[in-house]
Image (cartoon, rainbow, N blue to C red; front, side, top):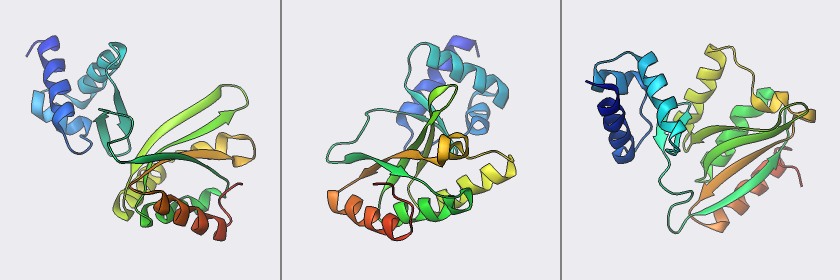
Length: 173
């Protein structure tokens, strides 16, 4: 399959997908390696296609927030060992954790997609970080302060999550 045709198929597949798709899955669909898919995704992003890489795979971002959804940014601070607790508090209140953002002393604003909505996705995210021996983005920030964009169905979900984060000593006010 020629490259342009393959990229069109990848784009159409991601646009229709109701979940993140891994490079391996896209590679199997198009009969190429995961490395070729990584290159194809880079080329699609260069054409301003809103594709993000999450810990679960690639996603096409249709709209910033779905209809009837609320998006809010929360400021947090905690030890790296509390990351799973923080994410679980958020998803247990029905929130989707869209990303993490920090202000790096050299690079300025840095962000990474997380896109976790339940404990299983949190567990998988933590496993991937540990397996890759990666550093949490918050560890790169001055004083570990970081932001999370969260998505909820109701304002009450966010308010209850904020209360729980305060009780855990994680929310910065």
